[in-house]
Length: 394
Image (cartoon, rainbow, N blue to C red; front, side, top):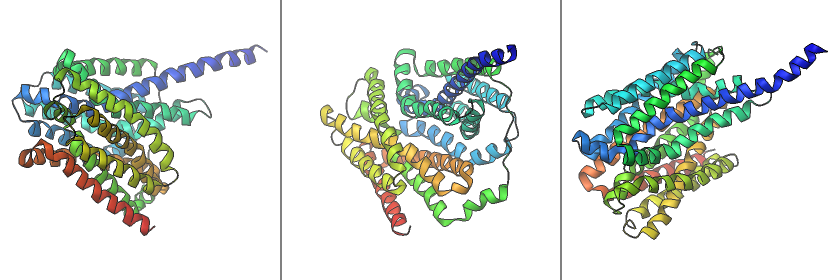
């Protein structure tokens, strides 16, 4: 009877341990993705301190995004055979070191290097985190484990920028990177101490996996993600500057405005997840239309804060909804190779983020900050046309 009692008693302990390990994974996901998006909220202060224009500073966003886009699928495949605990610990240590370098940056070139290095590790972590969460979970709990890790990613996508802006107001933009560096180091230590050794899962049947890259419809879905994220980030990359310059929001309040933008956006995360299962392309069209209205209205209404808030609510809901909508839509289109499809969507998203920062910077340089809403809306309209054409040819 004793062995049975021990096995029963150890079950809650095992569940508790796996819960702690999944929490560590979720926090790691939050820190890693926050490192990418935090800089958007820091751009005005960072540009001023480094002696460059806001448009030039915005190109470090492009650098990070394009690095993820170009190296993500290749590095994820190459590192598939590395034991997960070791892999994640190294990635977190690299993030800690790169955030220290960012905090110590004396010019835009040092900052560019500090952004390039972690961009190599982000897609590797993002592409393998859900699989690892499933390995850590108790039997029958893998779905819940994956959702908890993705909650960390979603929270970073929504709150990473405003948290960075609020931190910059209290600690300075360099202080924000110091905080990220310390947390990255702490999570790396916890990862090493608490995480079990987890076998890697090298991809099998690689040739069959890549067959989806020959399917025109799948490639059209990837292109649609590029267009959607380009529209989103043409304006969002410079939202902090829009609030300061056009809406006359005090610098110490911009972070809280962005926090509200993210909080409202969590509604969109729920709606997007619910609607994409019914009609992936229909959900794309709906939220792209809402996004267009919000972005187009925000800048003309910037001086009237009541109407500006209304426009930002529409913008925020659609912006956040499009993250899960794009991810699920592309994975459904590449159902025979979902891991590769997910990585392709991450690359597509980062291509759009980089292009958005470029188009936004060009718009500011040639037409002024006030042009961003219309430029972003024009790109969103193109995405809507593509989605409607895909619906007709389905």
